[in-house]
Image 1 (cartoon, one colour):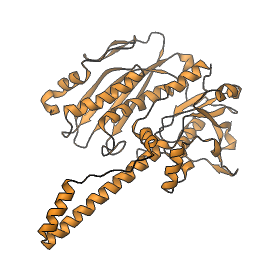
Image 2: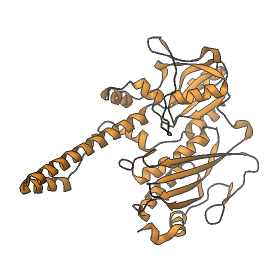
Image 3: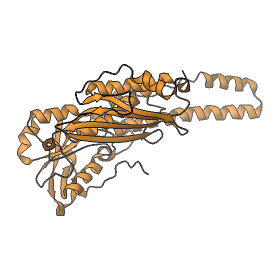
Image 4: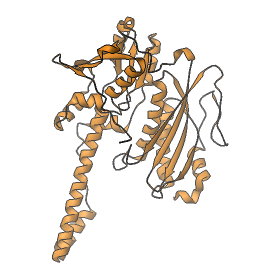
Length: 367
């Protein structure tokens, strides 16, 4: 169905009519001029992400359900990165005429899966038309006790530097998708070139054969053995489970953020805002086997991919050195280095004990 036939309010009603409120702080959700929220004893955390087609995502290789899921998760991740609990989101969409009502239902099905996983309420948003593709703006609202909030500026000398999960897989998943997309369009362009040549030569029999090949063209991308990389790129996960493990262990990080633009970039943010340096050990950076194999296949340095790839949405955090034993007992967390005085700089120690200045080469959306 065409979106224009439903209209803005009809579309919003169709997408949100059966949403059930899960949080006491949500007093009133979708349906009026404003949502009504109540946080009498907590600090309110608010984060917003704007995702643009052609910049942040490519609909050639991500379907709308996965896009909805990922769009919600990247916002939810920001609230966890402040040691908070996500409670509500608002969703605004700019849509071109190529999208149908059914397309938006697919997007919302993914969005709602992500929200249901972390008990987040969808409480509002907006829709409008777009002449340049799909634009998604999501705001996530969370809560935390004042004393529990973790900022980027609290890292201290001798603190331990930790990360959750493994790094670089999402970036290698993107490289894999881009490679197969390039192969696909290369084959299509080759067929179209042959069709043009046959047309110019007046070879109608060859032209008919080539047009038949083009109309029945069935490209099969080579993803065998690389499913984990695709999952990491297409289905981002916010690490609320790690936040829960830290709370259960009685550990409050001194500084924390999620890894969206690359480990090196996020480390630089923490060091700059905390007025400290750091010493990171290459051998300790967690890298999955598929990531290493894919990097070798594409003739890329796997450590560079892990440091600068981005979109892992793992948690990078620092903890007091006294929490060393507790951290080592938590599955899914890796100790990768420690904080130093600012004068010692930001250093990467390689596997052969050479030292290099750590540089932020993460993704820049404004380039």
